[in-house]
Image (cartoon, rainbow, N blue to C red):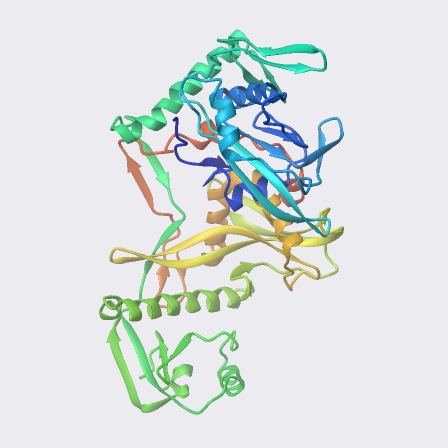
Length: 484
């Protein structure tokens, strides 16, 4: 059987075809496309119109893959609404597989999954079929026919070729045949990586990792009997901002920090017994797994403390950094030095969220974390969004999550690297991020120049699914037209 190789790429993100990520994307679609078809039900019984479904499967596979979604009703032309599967309705994957494979010489692996989602306040069941791209032109080995009333309908004949044109499964034109052949060649290329035939084109690959210069020492001392309120008060008196987000970790009744606790002028030294202070090499700590995790946590606390001091908000619950906005405003912009020129980026905008039935503030945000790779530490940056009602306090829930999911799949993702570099620029004012005199993060991402290909190293523009324009990103464009 022809197996599914790799995953699908949806706006620069590779995922399993029926993963939660892919399904969240599919649940937000309302229109059929070359890679997507909606059905209320499909019938796979012996005497049914299944050849119509088989024709779609041939077309999707030759086109490059796609999905058939079951449980959607067409309210008007090419406008589909998720209503769910009938209670007594189900699809047996083995029967579906067997029915289609009876039309081909080389079996094709179809994936089927049923999930439950809350839609309009009700939990409903939906079916998802994924059709993988073919590795050669897929053609039927016999006629596909069925009876409709007293008449017999022939859907396809042996050797017919089908392809997706818009929302239709049709026989391809001469030009589409050429596109199909080129697509097959690329599909063979993708598979050839596993058999040792590498791409000979040299490529430079950018990552979302930024190398970190780490402190030489970690300090720890016995903690004085202070509670959190007392610590806040003391640090505020010392002029530390933000005094509510500490640059230390409590560990074995000790204060653990990169701050020099031996220095009596250091604000954090006032939190410990100055007769019981120790200092050890960070390299030694990194050699121990448990202590290594503490070093990573301290680096993260330093970064968040630094970001808050730059008036960037931090949601501890969602672990995201974002810019706030006042209630009286509808939009906030920030100047930054882009990859090629200075530009303006909208970081917050008020938008209508149809899923919520109200207007909310949408904030461009990012996850940030430290990763240890070999002997080095890197900062990893992942762009995302946060929604608020008042411009500062995040809201959450299933419906809010669908809004963020939808935004994350639009053209914003096409400038993924640019968005990562925006956050690095904001934290470092266009230079390396100098959190203190002992922590510095490179402003240039880690790059690799490859002389041979690897799986999915072909530019994503050639393989990713073309996502239709939702229009949401228009709310988040800067004066230079750059989307967030």
